[in-house]
Length: 226
Image (tube, helix red, strand yellow):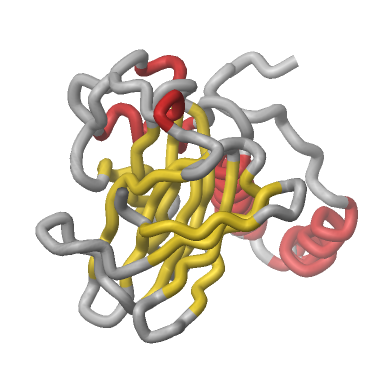
């Protein structure tokens, strides 16, 4: 039983790792015990350092588990806490995720009504792109002819990350650029993330089109922004 709800269940150290730590780190230190009165202290120090290293490794494992866990994981809670006046803060869950690099990624979080895009820095949710959403029922506005909608974008100098929502029967999302480029998106739990080299600007007409493929094979194409 997990005594700390914030953390996943404890895991047993793999046997191969345990045997390697014993043979390479602990046993050699024990062998020198008879050579010096200071050996026990050296062994103790080695065990402490070794324990610290193992603790760091398990912390990294727990962090990874939290990021991919379904429901309101610690990462989702960090994203929710980074926004102000978030509607129904306990109802948020993880959607699509895209990692731009080991240090920087993005996660769409959602409720049954709305969604928001969160920045992930070094494994932690650090802020909502565009601020906290209003409690508008965006999902009820999706239609069979337009089963997706635009949320926001993160525009960089040479590449751009676009976020949106979709109905649950949308299997894949492709972004079609005005240069005839096709950029496949990541779809997860009624949300999507797409990276391409075409920016979106709310002050200009939409420059990207979405091609959504439904579970039944039907494809629907429409502007990214309505």
